Structures are given as structure tokens and as C-alpha cells.
Length: 415
Ligand SMILES: Nc1nc2c(c(=O)[nH]1)N[C@H]1C(S)=C(S)[C@@H](COP(=O)(O)OP(=O)(O)OC[C@H]3O[C@@H](n4cnc5c(N)ncnc54)[C@H](O)[C@@H]3O)O[C@H]1N2
Ligand code: MOO
Image (cartoon, rainbow, N blue to C red; front, side):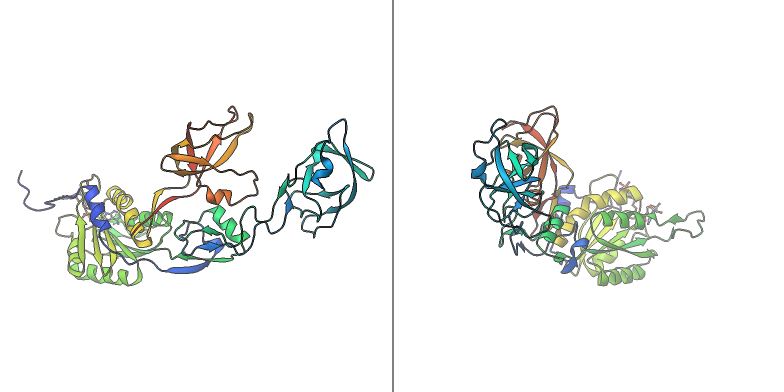
């Protein structure tokens, strides 16, 4: 069959993406927002710790603050007796103590001046004004030391990171109420077609409800964009041109649906060609063949098919690349996804306890972080994944293949 009209050439996906990557788009600006609005947003500044976290030595357990040297040699038969000289309540300033004494402390309370370790409650017994210690501790055992989590001056988060809940926690603990992030890309959705009606309007034969706009609105929200619905535009060259120009004046990107094929009403690519440049139009995919991309004044215009399935498939295929160019950040893998990795070191764990080991995943390898306390939030910022050791296993060996669940999006810088 001779093909007289229509798509002469269709670009294969790889070439379409390559063509897209060769185009320069205007990047979105940054803005300062409250940290409660920053989750999932792209950080636009390096975050430097203004002070140590914790900013004082504190007890990591409930028990008795002691001078570690006093407890040496203590055991069940030969407990060490220490005089209780007071208590540090949570949030209180620490008291002072000397050798031969002990002070009651809780998890998180400040370590008394003069103490250098804490004995867990389980290894002690109060006898009148004294406490019997049944187990020795080494200096700084059960103590979270000042600056153990974050040291003043340290770069804790780098510009370009996609902010995760743990990052927001770290920002708060460092005293940041606001943070500089990239603006959400504003994307204007234009629905084209003489047959379209809005939700609630009368559905005569031949008419179709404009469902694409609402579908794309939802999809754009999921990509952390700021979508807006322009509305329905008739298949008229001048009206389409006016709509696209107006949408571009408020948006960082425009998405059109319908009118991308070769029929007489399919005018969208013609309009884009007149006021800008076509990057590609017609991809070797099914559904979604008539998907196209144009650029007008440095802003992308994504042309999607009117058929809802073709529309969504074209969107999911091309929009992430457009977004990466608009923000300078490409998401390679999303938080919550699993990746296979070889362990760089063994992960120890206790049988019967499901253990969540924090790891740094890179290029097929997972490096477990050497960290103890569940109070060390930066361990969830330095790590990008978690390896779950099930109850029935006692750790994983070095070199073993494990599943890493990502706790942050894996990203790549885009030029
Ligand atoms: N002769 C040819 N005809 C067609 C070709 C071709 O190569 N040669 N390609 C076909 C393919 S593949 C597709 S996909 C469609 C693409 O059509 P358009 O993108 O031009 O879309 P429309 O014709 O405007 O609409 C198609 C269909 O979708 C409905 N629609 C449109 N907008 C919406 C909306 N906002 N919400 C819900 N539904 C919508 C519209 O009513 C039509 O039924 O072309 C083939 N034809
Ligand atoms: O290929 Mo169309 O792209 O049939 O939906």
C-alpha cells in the first residue's frame, strides 16, 4: 500500500529521547518555603550544620550515670555500690557528680558533669540510698556524644537532592524552619477537539467528555508539578495558536491533547511549527504513535494523542525527560523501589529480630553504614537504602546478594 499522507517517518524511542536531550529548556526558578511544604521538592542550596547534633552529651538508655572506672570488675557476685546523689530529668540542666556516686538518668537526658558512662537499669538494683552495679561499662558506653549525629560546619544535604522525610527531620533539628527549593514546574494542559465537552455538560452523540485534562492533572501532581487546566480549545489554527501562546506565558511547559494525527482537524503540530520548532513528531510506539514534542521560546510543548490510553502512555514515556531538563535533576529510581546489590561488608543481626540495616547503594553494591543508635537521623540521610534482615537469619555475609529498598530517589544531574 502506498502511503500518500500521514506520518512518513516515526522516530524510535531512543532517538526521540536523544533529540529531546539536545534541546535547551528554561530551568525553573527557586523559592524559599516552609519545611512542611518542602517534602518531595528539589533542594536548591547546600545545607550546612549550624551547630552540633546532639548539642550535649546525653544518655542513650534509662539507668544510672556513673564514672566508668568505678564499675570495673563489677559482676553479679561482686556488685559495685555507688551512692545515688540525684537525678537528671528530661530537658533539665545536668547536675554535677564525682567518683563513687551515681545519678538516675533517662534516655535522652543530659549526662551529669563528671560522669562518663551510663549503666542500663537492667544491670542495677537500688538499695536504700545506694545502687548496686552488676556489670561494668567502658567510658562513653550508652552515651550519645555531642556532635555524634552531625558536626557543626558539615554539609548535610547537597543542592539537587529530592527532600525525603528524614531530610526534613534533619533540617528541623538543625534549626531550619525554611529552605530554598526549586519551584514546582507549572504545566498548563490544553485539550483540543470540536467534540469535547466539560464534565456535566450535555453529552450528545459525537461528543466526548474532556477526561484527558483531569487524568493528566493527577499524573502531573504525582510528579510534584503545579498543573493547571486551560480548558477546551476548538480545532481552529488561530484559536489554538492563541491558547498555546497564552499558556506559555504562565507555564514552564505546555501539554496539549488531541489533534496530533494527520486528519484535517489535527492542527497542533502545525501551530507549534509556526511559532517554534518541532523536536520530534511521531514515535514508533503503540499506543501513542502521534506523540510529539516542540519547543517555543525555550519552553517545551508536549503534544499527546487524544485517545486516553495513547495520551497517558505518551505522557509517562516522555514527560520524565522533559521534567529532568526543566529541573536539572533526573530521577533514575524512585524511593520505595527495590534494587539488587552485592554486600560490601557483612551485616550482623540478632536471630528473632527483624533488622533494618542502613546502606549506601551505588553501582550494584551496598555498603552497610557503621551506626548504632536509632537516634542518629543522619544515618537515614547518608544512607539511600535499607536491607531488611529477616527474623530467621543472623545477618548477611559479605558478597551476598541482597535486596535494597531505596529510602530516597536515586538521582542524576542533567546538563
Ligand atoms: N489516517 C490516520 N488516522 C489516524 C492515524 C494515522 O496515522 N492515520 N493515527 C491514529 C492513532 S495511532 C491515534 S493514537 C489517533 C490520534 O489522534 P489525535 O491525537 O489526533 O486525537 P483526536 O483525533 O483529536 O482524538 C482521538 C480520540 O480521542 C478522543 N479525545 C480527544 N481529546 C480527548 C480528551 N481531552 N478527553 C477524552 N477523549 C479525548 C477523541 O474524541 C477521539 O475519539 O489517531 C488515529 N488516526
Ligand atoms: O497508536 Mo495510537 O497511538 O493507536 O493509540
